Amino acid sequence: MAGWTIVKITKLEIEDFGKFHQYQLELSQGFTMIYGANEDGKSTLMAFIRLMFYSNQKSVRDLSNLRKKYLPWGKDTMSGAIELMTDKKLYRIQKSFGATAARDEIDIYCITTGEKLLLPKETEAGEWFFHLDQDAFERSLFIGQPGPVLTYDGKKKDDIAENLKNIETTGDESISAEDVLRRIQEAKEGMVSKRQSSGVLVQSKAREAELFQKIAKMKQTEDDLRLRHEEARDLNRSRDDIKRKKDDLEKQLEKEQEAVEQVLEAKNTLEECRRRSDLQKIQVENEKNILHTKLSMEEEKLTLLKKSEPTAVDKKSVRNYILAGILAAVCGVMGAVMIHKAFLVLLLFSVLSGVLAIGRLRAIERHAKSLHEWQMNISTCSKKILEYREAEEAGKKQELLLKSFEEIQREAEEDLIKKQKIYQFYTEIREDYKSCLRELDVVKQQIFVLLSSFKQPEEGLEELMGEQRVIHERIMEQQEYYDALVLCHEIMQEAADEIRHTYAPKLGQVSGNIFAGLTKQKYQHLLVSKTYDISVLPEGAQYRDGAYFSGGTTDQMYFALRMGILQLLEEKEHKNYFLLLDDSFTAYDESRLELALQYIDLYCKGEEKQVIMFTCHRYLIDLAVEAGILFESKNLRC
Image 1 (tube, rainbow, N blue to C red):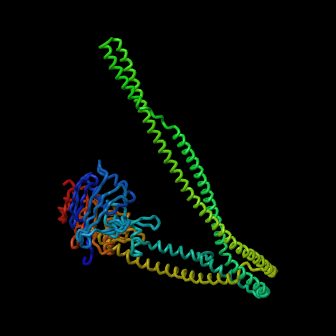
Image 2 (cartoon, rainbow, N blue to C red; image 1 turned 180 degrees about the vertical axis):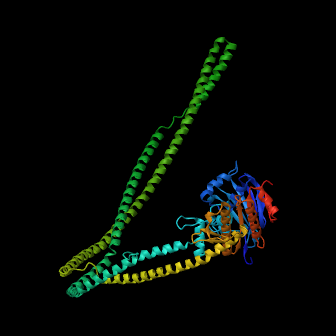
């Protein structure tokens, strides 16, 4: 139809889903029959389409079951895509299925414009494209195998019948007129019960009457109270004067805490100064004593070192021992050669002289080493003495710093004395304030004694009159609200009845026309009752309840009513939706099946319609060919 939106599926692409892997299925406009034997994947494709549009499956189509059922063996993910034409634009929906709907990853692109579509949070793809939730989708765009005739008894909830009734009475399948009327009635009874003995409005009026009585009684005692108040006027004036004085003192005492904090701060400062001064004194004294001790020890050590200088060894004796040894050796050899061998004894003296010379050389080496160590100790000790004397000079500076700490301490003591004097001033004000409070208590007691002879009312007149005004205004608002509820209930009831009287015949007329075509005009009149019971008028007979007809005829009623719902939905949305049929005619005989196929053929002609029927019965295709039905056939095995 002109101005209507065409909604159709153009392609299915399955990466992995159930038994399908890298599978594509092109779909065109018009009537398409998809044939597949049992376990060829017909149900898998239907589940894939539902999950692509609606992740949150419910009831027997529980999401976790479907995901586990169609998860390919040996894999942990499923994914695929659907291309959809709507609003003269081609869209592509890509989805990777997670373990739950929250873990799904979905991307939607407009192929026509090249833009990526961002859905609102928690919005399903089917809700966005079809303006239908999952239940409405499966009630209208998807017709499964024949089921019971649609009924609604007003008590037991039936999702399809109830939503149809909502459209009938409110124009929106998500809004129930009966629920609205029931809520209005509950609101009315909340304001005024049926017996007018309870309710918000009744309670407000009762409270207003009670307030009127209390106010009248209190006005009788008003004059007597006025006299008592005049007698207390002078006392009140005196009380006010004292209160003003008290207020002035309170303002002055507002800085009392600040003075207290300043005194505490000054005390803490003084204590800290004393603590630091004492610590500094101890530290300086300790360091001074330690340095003095160390200096004395090092000076004593230096004195001892100077006294213990190593004795020098005579180097000339070494030379003498060597010369004597050489001379003895020469004499011994020459005497033995020239005179007698007895002179060889002189060689022993020569050896002894050599040994003594070597001993003297070693003694000289030990003396040199000892002398070096002694000189090093003398140097080290002298350096330490110099360092300790320099440290003593630094200690004198610490003593000067200690005097500065003592000066700071004196300043802190003076600051504490100054702030204590300020606090003493506030102490005197505090005494005046206490005296003022005592005077105020005396005046208040006098006022109490004056008025104690008169019984004071439990509630003030102004308070009661203020509450009465509030209650009266509330009653006016509640009465206006109650009158509006009454009027709204009447108007809503009249509107619901009027819409029902116009919509039910329209649904019956549309479904009846379809039913007449399916039965070769044998049944031309079909009534849909207020509770959606179906009645049929056989030719030349009276209307009879649909339950009295054969199972085949009942299935035709069901199909006609579902197609009527779809047509009314399309009129409401101004859209030509695609239609999915899942072996919807398995219980039909050959004659009824041919009529159903002819209806679908007629349904697709003249308008841009798309009907996709999944079937596991090959004879349906053969029958469609023999009947001259224009359709496209696809085999899941190809």
